[in-house]
Length: 197
Image (cartoon, rainbow, N blue to C red):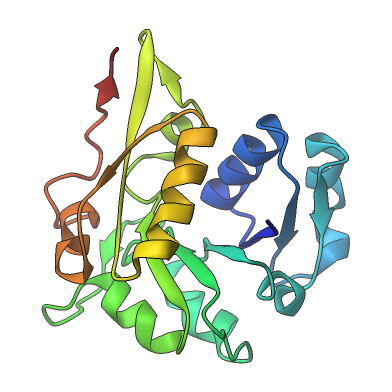
């Protein structure tokens, strides 16, 4: 299974560390090109590889971890997606002010879905701050990660990956449920749940 990340900010870097710590290879890309990722690749070790954004988009599972206002520009030249799984880790806010974008009642993943025609979108890895996301094991249990999407096989692939990384995954359902874990309006973002037993 090929796994890649588009975006090397706090969330993308946290996910890369989780993947390599679990013994999985990962390709990482950003808007500045592979050369800019050399320090991160050196830190992550031989399981991590710097690639172009286009190369990253060809993986079986692609994590999209780009600031909200930059998503459209990042994905516009990519595709067709041909059924590849895209994990949407984004929230409709912009750091450092965390000002929410007005989506006119839509969930953020509905907006992202239109930017990625023919991709199988799964919303996940978006409701916890990077510091919590980086530590699946917590308080003697497993930290909970929510995921949702319309494609059952894609969700299963992401669920299996969530488990392999050491989390306890909870399926929120389909498209209409994605807003539950969407920051800042949903009720679940920032809730740090731990599954024991």
